[in-house]
Image (cartoon, rainbow, N blue to C red):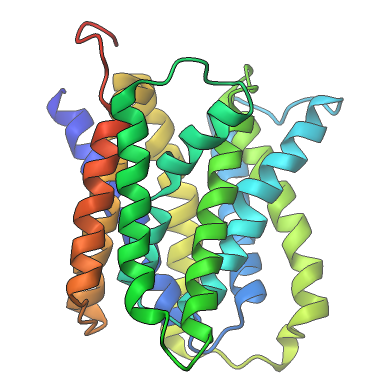
Amino acid sequence: MPLRAFALLILLSILWSGSFTLIKVAVATVPPVTLVAARLVIGAAILWFYLRMIGGRLPTIGPAWGLYVLLALTGNVFPFILIVWAQARVDSGLAAILIGTMPLITLVIAVLSGVESRVRGLQISGVALGFLGVVVLFGPRIDDTASAPILALLALIGGATFYAINVVLARRVVTDLVAVTAAVILLSAAFTVPLSLIVDRPWHVTPDSAAIVSIVALGMLGTALGTIVFFNLVRMVGATRTSMINYLIPGMAVLWGMTFLGERPGLSEFAALGLIVAALAMVNRRSDPTET
């Protein structure tokens, strides 16, 4: 991998793993839907400006926008709200570990939907190992008298599942990915803003300065800049090598949570992290070493 591409990979890992830390800070004083709406509005504005700057434009209104609506709901609206709601109740590192199961769930959905026809034994073993990692995380919390942590873990699995559905749906996109992504983020903002007005009544919200900075950073860095870096990285090294980011994000998110939030993951978190990263390696391993 060229040095510039490697640098972009590390940058993207920092941006997306750091989002879990920023969410944890912001959700302390900003309710979930409002946090998501603000992040998406900022991200949509920057991406629209970037699209105009590179001479692009939004896709023409037509039947394809039905797919874009589905991508907005499954890739942003539903998973973002579930993740933020969960992070008000569990550590950021734990959230990142569970969201890290997304590629495993994607494989299962792709097989069940017929999108993926060839599945190797190693991939099946990888999914089983990833499931074991999830069990390791849930196990110590089953006897917990408080139901909120279990519900939060289920919400995170739900978020990962929506992301996985989004990946399968996104394979149908054959036009300019930057333009489509800008359209999807705009739609996501359009869905979440009125929902925020109804659910959270944001005019009563009093965020502290840390929350405001975190939300602005989420929109500018996690959503807008992260998307731009992602597409540049895919152009440079392809989607397969870019997917290496899935190995980096959970561990880096755990590190940020320990460093900046004082989180102290237990043995089950570290064990699950190891199992899930190993599972990702098994699922993504190519049978043909010459494949690009």
